[in-house]
Image (cartoon, rainbow, N blue to C red; front, side, top):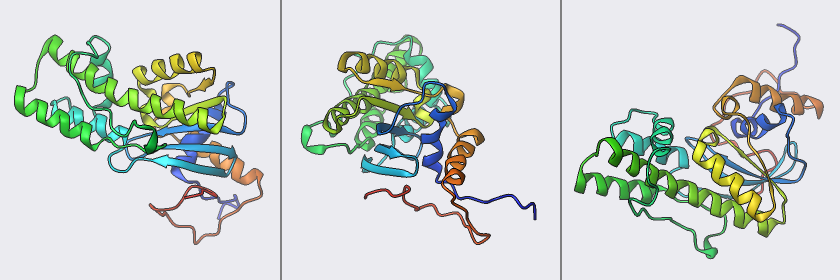
Length: 238
């Protein structure tokens, strides 16, 4: 026994806490877009340990769409970073991909399975391109993902009357998403807070940051603490 205190940290709470390791941390309350391999959700961060989930993906997460898309294109797995790199030199209007659940009635929920299927059909019909055509395809596919993420975030920020937005999770390292969200913030008047790429992917520092706030609230866990893949966000309203 070390005598050190033990606390349990929700993985997504860790992603949400990464921004507090940076000088440009958002005030409370604010809106957070969590985008990772297994999660895509919009959360109202009321305070540390008080999170309200406003909407989430109904099927594939944005990170899954990136990685499964890269696998279809033979770019390796995980391949979200490869798509991002190729997209930088491509034409995002070259291929028309669907933007699912962007009508106002769908609120803050997401869906990316149809986009992945659309890419599959495109590859079956045309094969996997090379060179500039591959860059164009990657740019078009990435643009479809990014547009949905940004559009939903803008709409939710307005509806919740929040002037600060943070983006976190592995997909927050995507250059296209970072640029598009900052452009949206400048246009709509909300401040955008995104950790540096090294803090976006899973890292020990973000878990420590979340754990710090648990300890500051006087929370402790016993030795019966166990992992739970279905644990809700702290004080989340489902």
